[in-house]
View 1: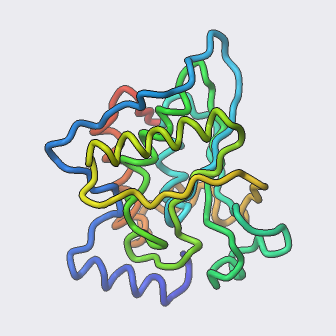
View 2: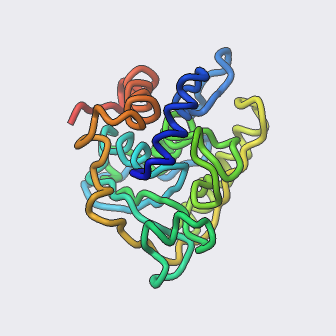
Length: 223
């Protein structure tokens, strides 16, 4: 985030050869589609998903380039309204996670396909309470489900991936009910697009968008 200490940490990590915090699936493993998924809708509409997986700048940037996504908003989930502010969330003591609310058209992309991008592009689901240079419970991997269908799809996909040993370590992603989503401050919105030369974006987030284009060309949009 925009603090000098965070920027210094990012630059130090990059000098040590750190890479963007994409999921490190086995190179030999395919990227399996969810066996259990919602059916593709027959008509255009809007549905919502909320996930967290590290700094919301990068997660938002990835989903802004996914076909069928209408909007992606950075924000906070897991805590109360009175603590939904960046400086407080950054303490790691609010229960909030930096999250992204995704509004999508279910006639163009399914909930399971969004989770596929979440696990294989947006973050590393095997890192506990951290992503890349960012550490703390506010950077935890979580899926905040809105209904029973989302819960079933998320839990089934995690079990499927763990059983297939797609990742070298077990998935630590929490699947929890969504209580509320609070949009982050205006300066956090569209941060990667507005600050493409910022070192944190260059080293951590731009590679995720490039990975999306390579890994899922059928889901990538250059918008």
